[in-house]
Length: 159
Image (cartoon, rainbow, N blue to C red; front, side, top):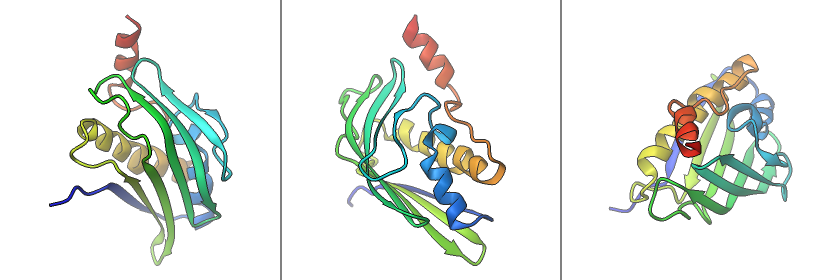
């Protein structure tokens, strides 16, 4: 059996344009303190949870109302042996209009069950997509940096 890439999808009663705009607003649903551009092909940004996780990400594809692709250029985790898991992974946000609204399918190409971080990373992505990003799309307010246990991890790293 081969490892499967991690994927999660949501359907919301909003237009593809509204979902697309929310995906591009990574500060609104993933990390308030993201540094860099998050909207155009060629933009690069850094996501960081001090002492826990740091990613340098490039937007490689931005198709309005349809698709956004991130490429993980560099990555570091404090909580796994291979600190560079994710380097070279692609994160895809595919947006499709449906009868019930708009479907957003999030896929991290390379985040597979054999990764040491999978048991922590997959529930984190599920929270950020299925809860925080969904909230940003539907209510205008996401939950960036509010993953359960994240505040405690940051405080422990500082101690």
